Length: 327
Image (cartoon, rainbow, N blue to C red; front, side, top):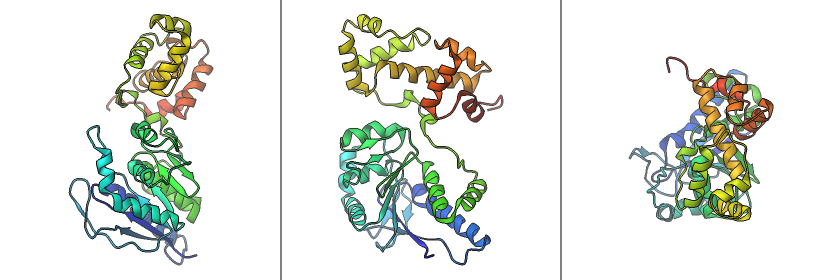
């Protein structure tokens, strides 16, 4: 079998770690596969760019090659902060966006890491497709293009030859998936063990912190959220909530939905799960006790809601995220 040709697209301001992270793991896969009897490397990796010189975020220089035929093109992320002028950043990366668009048109499989998805969206690759990115920027990605469906809970989403991943470490989830498909589950499993990677996680939901999400232009919903936050253990009553804010239930659902993209009940469930996560991480409270505090008479109902929001059951979450006495 011929080696899979991987190109990583480096560009000004990209994260150097996301340029080299996948290639490093694939280099390990080549060695493991060779130790298990493979006669030739499974992957050929090159760092490519339409520019002659590239400096990554932080100023480090990256050696690049001119574009060459590849089977997979990986687009790393870049530094995105609240004061970043995203339109200006993407405008400066027109050569890269054009390269991405041309490679996709030629049938190359395109993969973005974290906010590299914004470059794919700028090139029109995500139109009509499902995609993901870091949960922190999922709303921002969705707001730029109503033609895509953003899946903020997913680690890796592949839709008709275009793959997007969640934040930073999700590049390894993609790499393990690629190795599993190309070299088999045994090689992927061995790589995960050697590199100390979790090859069984399937969602970024357990890592979401609602306190870090931006809340601009959402005064009405912020008031509703604060009211709900003070009543996590109280039975949800949409009529009472609407009366508190002097609106009809229909207006409550419409205005809250317009500002947040969810219903008050969905937010309340998220807020309860957020509180439950803190209790599971930092206390010895039983799952039943936590459920009761948060207004759930039936612990199994609470566990089902928790699992739906985080991708794992409360006991499994505690086992993975419990803070040790010396932590």
